[in-house]
Length: 312
Image 1: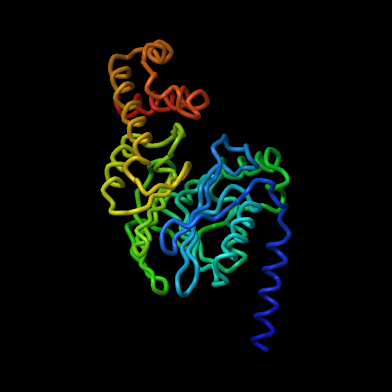
Image 2: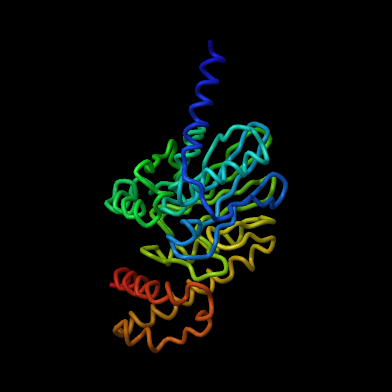
């Protein structure tokens, strides 16, 4: 009887997983080191490329799979699951969520249907309980239809991480580094110690200007110093290519955020109006970087407002 129930449960999961609209973008798993893989997203705005604009990853252990982030639609997560199944038939045990932003979480339901536990950083509930969460999902049901639709829902975490946490799964050791409110309401990274591979989430954007939003940019800058001191061989940013040169991969985000802080701290201290200050700043170091035109002025204004608050 137990075997029959288990088979029926597995069949139910399979039916659910197969219901998702297929994507036309290419979702491919790349092996980085040992048992560590990543899914490289494309460089674009939030709703470009069918929402495939962020990275995800997974690590295969002797007892099951640890997934890092879940991509921006259930359809993309289903494509990711198909890639995992090319590597292993072991169960999906855990999904570690770097932070609750739409391009990293809308695929969670696919892995939840596989029986995975969802672990996310403290601050997750600040997002889920906000007006932003349901409003953005409703918007994406239009802008990313049919890959996000009425069947797409926000998955709640099973466990909240509020401090650095080590855990084992099978023959693997992992370290979760909790950063607090940095890029989002709560951020954390995953280090596979066996594979010396770090998955950072959006603490780092490689190959493009990062999105600042309502980030705590002072804490973000300090967090980058912390991340740069983590011992690793391979590095997977939240956006952009993975690398076996971690310091180089972190360089653009590090330089850009510190440039914003330095320039705009002076501006706010001197009470210079934003438009005047923005025109006067020499942006040439970054103006050829991808996403500069789309993101830089918004980032600068967000930092300007942030510094006005903290420097009062």
